[in-house]
Amino acid sequence: MSQRTLVLLKPDAVQRGLIGEILGRIERKAGWTISALEMRTLDRSLLEQHYAEHVGREFYEPLVAFMSAGPVVSMIVEGERVIEGVRALAGPTDPIAAPSGSIRGDFGTITRENLIHASDSEESAEREIKIFFPGIS
Ligand code: CMP
Image (tube, rainbow, N blue to C red):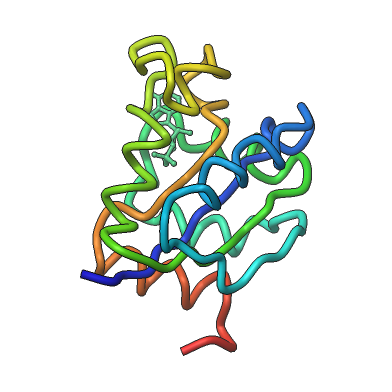
């Protein structure tokens, strides 16, 4: 089943020089393609839309501060079961609990600074793609 998903390489991944490492893992999956790609620093209003479900959580304000502190790489990735697949490559939210071989397990230690975001469902993917790539339908 071909799908598309919204992937973000968070400011920690960009600042640490891990764009190529992470992009390479995505590109090497058979049949997956990156169909849109952009690097920019995100503003608060975009992050408020993206993280609407987390408003009011104790980690929300530090998360918005972190996510707006430096450039992010945003992309649309398309391919077979890519929603589940990129989340499997990423590993669970807490990098210490993430297995070796996953992006978070190999490179992360702090839950907030967990390197990568990937949409968790087809509905989230369509919502998030509209936020980050409003010109792409
Ligand atoms: P992600 O799953 O991409 O989207 C929500 C983000 O909030 C998550 O990655 C982390 O960056 C951050 N986050 C989630 N839970 C916590 C937490 N308990 N403490 C700090 N940050 C968190």
